[in-house]
Image 1: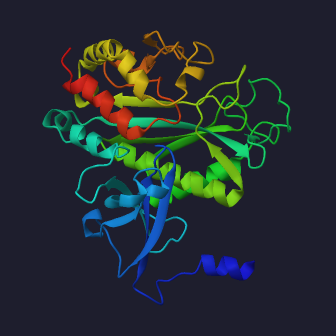
Image 2: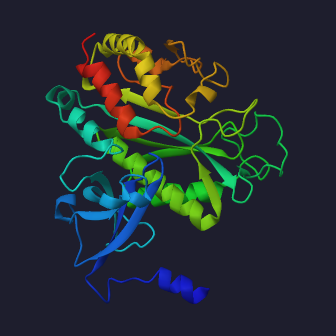
Image 3: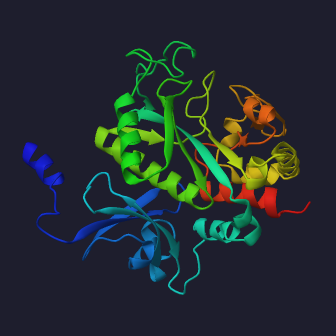
Amino acid sequence: MSLLSDLVNLDLSDSTEKIIAEYIWIGGSGMDVRSKARTLPGPVSDPSELPKWNYDGSSTGQAPGKDSEVILYPQAIFRDPFRRGNNILVVCDAYTPAGDPIPTNKRHAAAKIFSHPDVVAEEPWYGIEQEYTLLQKDVNWPIGWPLGGFPGPQGPYYCGVGADKAFGRDIVDAHYKACLYAGVNISGINGEVMPGQWEFQVGPSVGISAGDELWVARYILERITEIAGVVLSFDPKPIQGDWNGAGAHTNYSTKSMRNEGGYEVIKKAIEKLQLRHKEHIAAYGEGNERRLTGRHETADINTFSWGVANRGASVRVGRDTEKAGKGYFEDRRPASNMDPYIVTSMVAETTILWKP
C-alpha cells in the first residue's frame, strides 16, 4: 500500500511539463457531480485556454443513446488538492453539439442574469452556508449513531467537541484545507445541531463565482468522503422526527444594501421576495417540504416571514445590519440540495431586475 500511496502522490513537475485537468460537471439528477481527467501539454491559468470536451450524455440521463454527445465548456479553474502541482480542477457547463445549453445546465441562465448591467452595477455578494450529513456506508445511517438506534437528544452536538459529540471531524478539516488549497473562498466550518451533520460556508463571493465555488467545494467533499469510505448526503431531512434538517442558507447583499441607507433597500428587497415566495420555494430544492415545517429553526413552507435575529423566519436580518442601517440579509429557505446557480441568480433577479 505504501508504494500505491507513493505513486498517487507522485510529483510530476520534475519529469514533465504536462498537467492533468479534471473536468467536472453536473449530471442528470441535478445533484450528481461527474468528472473525468485529461492530459494537457502545460500549465493553464484561464478557462479560455482550455479545450472543450465531450461525454456520453446517455449514461448521465442527459441525452438519448442515438444522439448521446454532450459538450463541456470550461468555465472556472481551481487548483487540484488531490494531484497538486500544476494540476487543476475545471468547472464546466454542458451544451448540445449545436451550442445550446442542455436542460440541466443551470449555469448558463444564471450567467445571463449576472451579466445584466443593472446586476453588474449592484455587485451582488453571496455567502452560502452548506449543511450536509455524513452517513455510514453500508447502512445509510449517520456516522456516530448506534446501528438501528439513536444518540441522545439534540443539544450538545452543535459546535460540539469530544468523541461522543463530534463525529467526522477529520473529514471536515481535510475538506476545509483542501478548499483553501484549491482557491475556494471557504470562510468557515462548524458542527451542526444534529449529530453527524456539519456545515461549511462559501463566500463572500460575487455573482456567478458563488455557484462555481460551491459546486467545486461539493465535488472536493464528495472525493474526500469517497476516500474515507463515508457517504455524503445533501438530503434536506435525512432523519425524520425530532432532528434538525439540512439547509443552504444564502446570505446576500448588493452595493445599495451595503451603502448608507441600505436597510431601506433591504426591506424593499424582502417585500419583493415575499411576493414571489411560491416561485422561490419551487426552485429551492427537492424534498424541502420535509424540512420547512415551522420547527427546528425553520419557517413553515407555505408562509413567508422575516425578522431581526429570528432563525424561525423565512428571511433573517442580523442585529448588526439593523444597528448599522446597512448590510446583508439571510434567505433561510433554500434546502441543502439546492442548485446555487438557480438560487443566487433568482435572488438577484427578484431583488434587482423584477418590477412587481
